[in-house]
Image 1 (tube, each protein chain N blue to C red):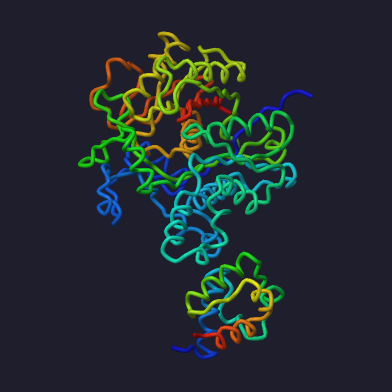
Image 2: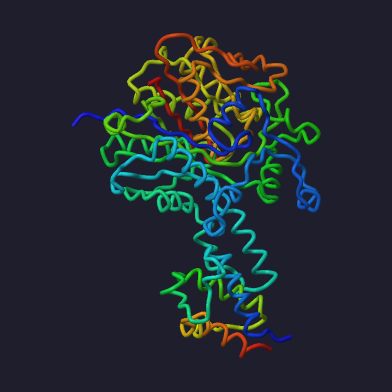
Length: 82
Length: 412
């Protein structure tokens, strides 16, 4: 089963809210995890691990540093679904 | 430089009998028990020999915001709740962060976090083990959380001396303040260890009461038929401050912390030294540090966990220090109501001691059916008036490992 871009964005927003308390409304494709959402490296890894489970994908540690924006993560997840 | 006098300006607690310090105190005076049958699947699943405990009345994750709670083990959550209450009660003192310290203890640390992560590792593999696992389970996590959330930069320290932990933290805080290294310290302790592993372990060493059919009356210090302690959980915190700093800001002063004593038995890993030698040395040290004599003591909050050997060893220690006069001093064994909060217990009992001095009454010791004739201390199921005049009280805590800690408070 493949998730659409919108479904991945909504799912990520849920994980981000859960981890940081940031309102889901603030989570948009162009937002930077560090500069806009103020997410630290530990929260980022927590979100990554939870996203892997939620979307059934593997996000290699080396890849995480390339995920600058929410859009980067959505693109990576949708294009690497099993 | 003269040694500064140290006072208590704030109290906070989240315990099995109340979500705050004043609520816990009121429930204590009313003779409430915090123990009840545990309503968890794991109790039956593992067929635990003990099926009850004194759980905290208010779950900390219902008080904290979710993002801050999810990065903290329940032990640190309790700590933060109690510390914030104490800090607010002290009037959120205006203090230089570099002159504000934290001494926050735990007996066991983040046992829930550790064992949940172990389950995750076995069920789902290493990738699913959360990055916050170690910082959440480390024993200093509570002290770190309090330091970060309240802006304390003088120091943040964790003592781990089992059930003596948070009394030792208060003693350490007192000494730090007396050395002039801080103006304000928040000191306390926490525990959240009502877990099948700890219940099984304590039960297996025959330390827990097995009155599964009567949890509310299971913790019965000094009763002739006492059969062990009742596990509790929660946290308590006090704000300690130099009197000069407190007076300058017009703070409310509950009591003075006048002395502390810490010793080790070097005898047995779990059994108390039977004559209470280490315990009596700690009491004498605390009184000496207070510049007080044994005749000045007007109230004792005993460690009294309701174990057959522990209660008698403490009595022998008290008898050796105070002589026959010990039978006239109003004593409270408040674990009868709260159960045993392990690393949190000393700080909770310190608060009860402070409030006893302030209100002039020793809180009741419930569940005294037939008092053990070998422990003829002055305890009662009702509050005991402390009488007029200056008050000096000690609160005792002893821990597995042979740790003994005693702190002395004087009426303000």
